[in-house]
Image 1 (cartoon, rainbow, N blue to C red):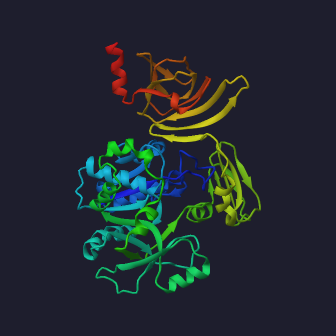
Image 2: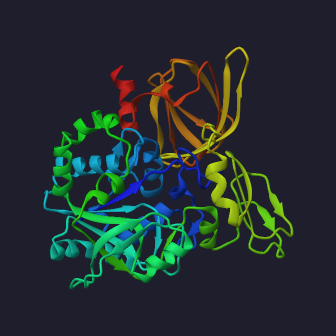
Image 3: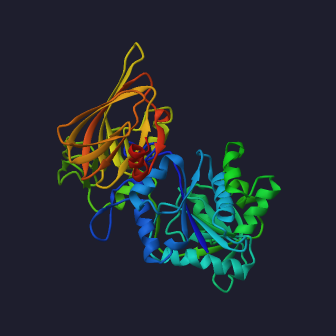
Length: 457
């Protein structure tokens, strides 16, 4: 059995900590068993490790999230990369092509799909594993996992089983689905044995490969990547699940929670204060999450969420926090904080002058032993001022060592890279006509290949 965790999302619901490059699953606001800050993706991967399942697990994600995943889980984690953000059907189709043509997985193998950010207990993964047996026993084309509801919620979709008796492993035949009913409807559905749809399902790989063939799509991963932009942006539920008649559902009666909004996320935080600041004792039910270097003080304010990052500041009543996506619908801004495979950076300042020249100032942190790729820029120059630590840099095939207090100038068109000999921090000031990611012209990623350049030239 292969497990695939879908890692997507645009990052609007947990703004300002999340953005287009750092979605909710990467926010380190939870706490690990050792008391360290932990993100949702780190938590679920740890749980898979504890269950002995990481050896058969993959993460499917867009290009913008690859470096965040590698930073938090390590560079060896198996990742299936989407060339652009679409929806769950294209993502799962590409995953199927990868498993078949790149990983050599048999069409008879069971594949389970689950979100990357379920907040669950260990027994959840026991039920995920059970889906393989459910597929074999039921002969179904799809096996879903449904959470036994704790209450009549309007936030979730529902899976409604038929009145047929449960199979030997407890599975039920699926009658139909209901998307986010009102409370009265939800109570009626629960009385009929309906389950919350938690987005977990399984199928035999060959089942999806047959669907791709019927649609005239290639089964080769690289070919499907080339045609990816031609695929309809549609959910797997609409394109496959709701058209399939032979479906069963495996009930799960343990703890499960969707931490998709500020009010649900803060319910599972071990402290009401993260970062620099003060929340007075009479500020009952209030949470402060501060990623800025300036303190925030909250006095006598109840049931609020205050979240601050380089991307902005949010102040909201907990009950109203789900409105953030609607309020920010037309708001566009470059990400002011990004996590990369080598460390992270914060944008300190950005100015675009009337004559068209742009200036961007970043505070960059690189972890010891990691490097930024050997690259050049056509439309900007850079100045690096080192604040702490020691590093090796390569400028046009020549290597130099730098330390705190050193300043390095990198004109347009200059090939350059940096390796952190210790944890290193520096201020980067970019100046140019267009300061965009597309102007990062990468020559090579591996530092060993960079070092070879000075001997080859």
